Image 1 (tube, rainbow, N blue to C red):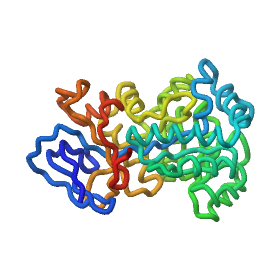
Image 2: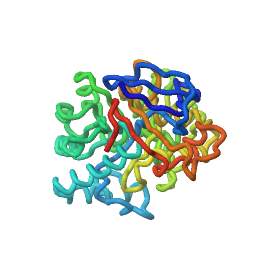
Image 3: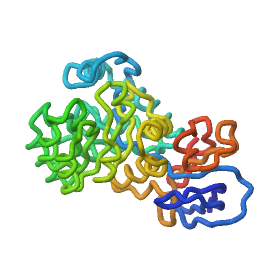
Image 4: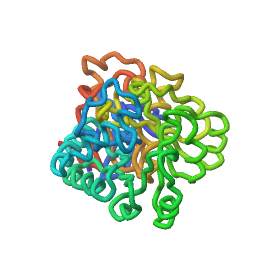
Length: 344
């Protein structure tokens, strides 16, 4: 049995408990309140709710470009770079990004993988031997579902996805779609497809949010990417009032997939609490994909991040939850535990 000591952020409210987490066979067996000397802060590992890991081949290539020029299919810089990359180059680039994410506390990423079956296979290959476990939303022909965990659509204004939506439903896999990123015109058409996940919703209005509530559709938001592409600021408080909201880092070409940076930006930009942001970065994404991680409580998967609470950066913080969300960085991480095992 393994144990991890310090200030443990427990349960859905991330209540700080001085004590230890007991782990056996990859599961949390107990959280014990006890006097301990450790200054660590222990909290659930991240689930990055929206990524485009293929963009690892073109980091910072889209600086100064508009949304359409940077990432819109089929002729953007992103898609040209993906089309030009050979298989080995793509797999190597994605694998290195996965290693960064793994070492900095991310247990899973909900990835929109372009280029159909070949794209899904490339991500599977890149993840081989890694502890991080990406959830792949495949693209193009629904035959990709043999290799992917679900289907990810670019946007309802880009193509007619009705037949593919029916095929995904028949396969009993989740269907996700971008909506409301450049404007609001694709939100109702996206909702008409009865998605299992909406991504962005920057331009969501009351009429859209009422449908989101009626249909119980969770939303993944990516505030830093929205800022980089200058598409607007997501109405985060309104989204949280209507549905489950999870946090993602979006395109690797635009931002490094750092959940620490995404949390800090979100907490300091929007009128939301640190606890809300930490839920968005952990258990919200886990529950969207049915994973039993994202919280520290008995019976959960033992995927956790351990910070040095006495680091030069974190020493003296008054509230450990705010410290994790607003101040902590990758340099404060002393251990990442995924399914009960430390990441090398």
